[in-house]
Length: 414
Image (tube, rainbow, N blue to C red; front, side):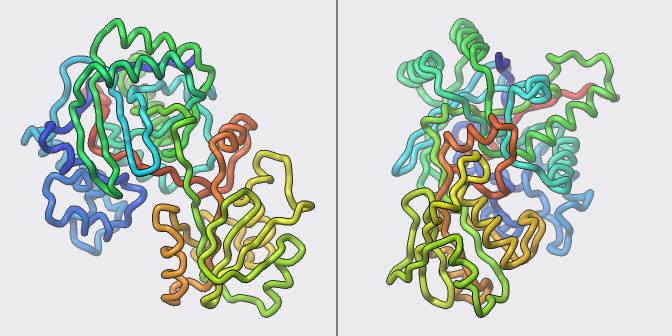
């Protein structure tokens, strides 16, 4: 049984939504964020990546960064660029791009469900990334970016959401990054809200699709608030997590590719041969099925196929990203922790194969691997197994934009 809650969102004035909404903080470097926000004083990046408004030499974890974020949020509210709703509501969020449309429900999930394992994860987190978001939440007293959750589709929930969108006008309707159209509705009818809340109570588990660090940070902040204010009830806003939930049937996982800056051994292909059949191809190779991957080296693409004896039925070991990790990265290049090793980087599928060839052809990297993405069922099976997928296994597109919905923690005065 999953518990969801309406909340009083802080959100943009309708005419400013497209100017305020930004890509998530964790898919942009500080330099990229600064460029995007340079001529846009409304950009939410001034809050989510506040280092862009400090001297260039300022470290992203400098105390001033978090204070600047809090100052900007206060200024956005004072200017009424952002306004808090007076009534607790649920919100519907639809993202539409060329090949996909997905309709999700924005609500607050609970810390209790997170701690009880009703919200399942599939990736480990890094302490320094958790610490960054904890400091950001602490300074702003708000969750400024939602967790991206999924669940096994429930027809009753979906029909309630769809009926609402067909009988009510959206509060936002604009097209933004990568030509994605974003539409949002306020669901404020108490009877309909209660029906959806009751329907979610029939769902056993939610799954984190994207936002593991945000989730972990929200839990840690909730626990610290509870320690500081022992009388806080579980209904307190600090004990809830801003979330957007989509049925798994509507989500698209893109490939999350690898580029390496390594020395290539002279017997490289001989070392690959026990695991893969290898065929040179005359153009960029995008894998079209599980067990296939592309390799780009010295201006040449190769199609690699995992040999049958190297395939596994285990939900984690059987993933292509796991095979590359265990059969290539570790034994050939001694890359054991892809989260920390500076010789590896990751390229989201939204950049296409050109993103890989450009990085190698520039000399910045020496070799690229084009991956076939895991399926949603593989992600759910991995989470259900209690095991963790390798880091950077999934790239969800389109991305939820930040700044459209903010959750005020309403922490009492000390």
